[in-house]
Length: 264
Image (tube, rainbow, N blue to C red; front, side, top):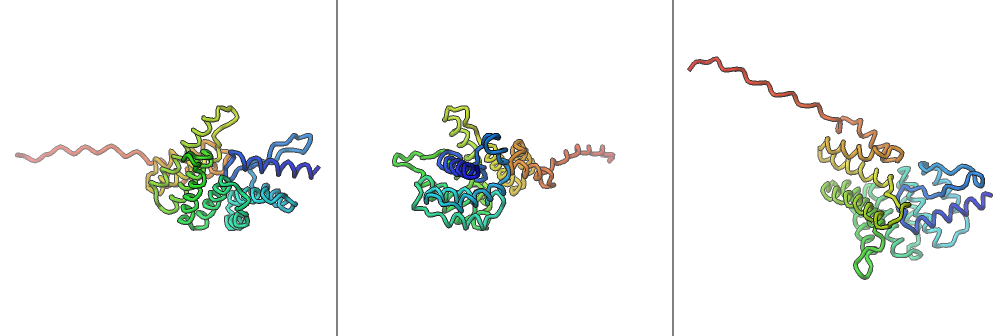
């Protein structure tokens, strides 16, 4: 039974990585039938996913699939803020085994990791390389949804470089591009990912907070908090309680000047 389970885990992970599911913290295990495999794994527990990914990697996998699984493991490690270990997993990936689009995915994930290891400048260089890999011979993007994720990562990197206008533009572009990509699928099963949406609104809130715009920061955190079951939805809810984004008290009306009593 366990052999069947881990085979299904592996197939699901690879299928997700080679399709349009690019969420860094996405939990890519399928919801199996309870009678066959027991209850499905919780979708908000990257620590549990990390355990299963390690078990899967201990098996004898085809070389290419092992590389993709390591990228996915790095996503889960980033979700629990273990960025150092995430970088180690990404640096074990054999890029020659991947397609250009998959290398772009690797670059995006490595850029995200570098930001939180204090190196947003190198992260931006990775993202520039990823964009080039996604351009086809006709100049069109091979994967618009991955391109949106790259814009989102760029926004986070620019925020950490204190380039606030560039950060805001990139994060808004990511939100807009994902909505457009999903609408072009003409498939009711395709939906904008709530985890990505919450994360982008959260970082937009951080941009406004850094620019000392508490009202705008609060509005953006509220947009993120509208997805309470996502990690960044919960972080946004916490941010809303901070004094820096508290709703300012209305200013008291001006006191009218006292009438003059002086004589001409």
